Image (cartoon, rainbow, N blue to C red):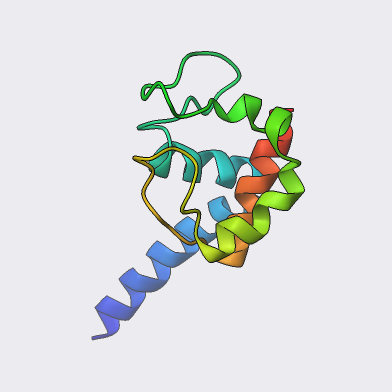
Length: 104
């Protein structure tokens, strides 16, 4: 049991500093890469893999980025017809909006 606790503490101590050291923009980009890049272009260049999905770098042209927070919290059900419904936690919303703002 002591060995398990020790291993758990070592693992946590190795992962938390890297998370804490990352910026909201970095965490938002990581979230976008893991959850959105299958359909959306998430970077400063490139086409979206799914044509109806707008590139993230153009979202600010259609919506004030700050106004997307409520939709992300409640679950986006519009967008394009094939977009899955999802809801983000407040910290995830902050991070993703920070990343989207960095693309403006």
